[in-house]
Structures are given as C-alpha cells and as structure tokens.
Length: 66
Image 1 (cartoon, helix red, strand yellow):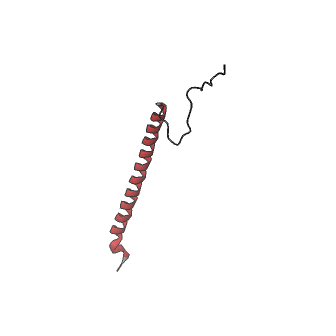
Image 2 (tube, rainbow, N blue to C red; image 1 turned 120 degrees about the horizontal axis):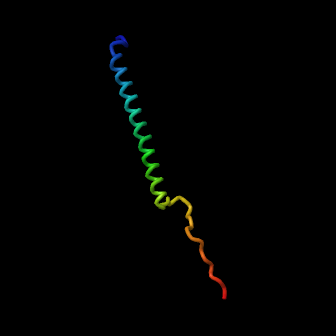
Image 3 (cartoon, rainbow, N blue to C red; image 1 turned 90 degrees about the vertical axis):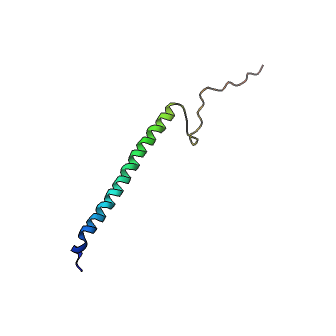
C-alpha cells in the first residue's frame, strides 16, 4: 500500500479543515466587530452595563439644617 494512493483524499481533507477553521475565524472576528459597534451605540444612548459602576448624572443635594 503506497501513500500516493490516498494523497488526493489527504490533501482534500486538509484543505477542507483549513477552509472550515478559516471560515469560523472570520465569522468570529466579524461578529466581534458587530457586537463592539452595538455596545458602543448602546453606551452612546446612555444604556450602561450591569457590571459597570453606577454614574451619578446629578450631584445630590444634602438637606440644609435650619
């Protein structure tokens, strides 16, 4: 049994694996960019993350003692 008998299958299998991994990598990169854009848009509108520290928009007025 010679290795050259199966060379076409081996090359095709490696090519398919490279194509799948490359496609998944591109998909993840594009989705990451889209999610970052959506997050930036939400933050511009004033929506904050739950994990972000609370920001005060107005200073609190302490009651004056009379």
